[in-house]
Length: 252
Image 1 (cartoon, helix red, strand yellow):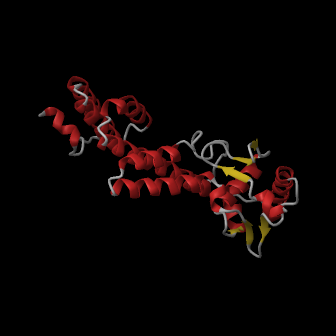
Image 2 (image 1 turned 90 degrees about the vertical axis):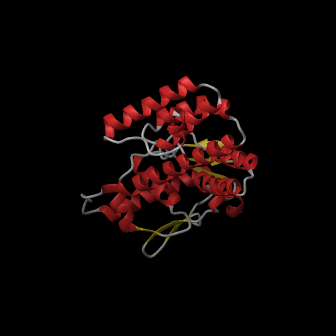
């Protein structure tokens, strides 16, 4: 019975941390409980060592009673999972000799589904199956509801996980944009690329793609302006010139 109920639960880290039973979302209570859950989710199927929890929860200054306090946080997490499941959660959140393990199907976590769709999109793009690549990456990006672990105040362990997920998100945008450009949808891409440039001002790839899309849309003056904005930003902020790429062709 528990396995059937647990299989209906999904977990979210691509935005606010959350648990959903069927179509009903649940928010976990307590900042430390959320941190514990985030670590368990991002290492689902593996034992998370108690030292890792202590490092994440207290960093350089763990209290003398850290292990006892950790057990209390796990206890409160279990009680909240019991509420979501409507059944005891011991087999879902297991205690090991050296730590704790969350025993879920990887597909129950949105980050796993997103990563699978990104890799599928990369494979399809490499095979020049651009329509399918757009669909795969679009489906993956649709899983995001904000920045990774938006409701968790990450310590150094979770911060690394969150940064990795954000980098994968950028990669998914790049794969989808490249596939759309191969389809010749340059005009369609311009507003999205302006948003991506604003969100990632030091990502030259997005700048180059915007400039190329403007040029291919017959908007050469705007392409030149975008190139000058890129060159000014890199020179003023980093003391650099734009890397070689399609952007330079607007000067020809």
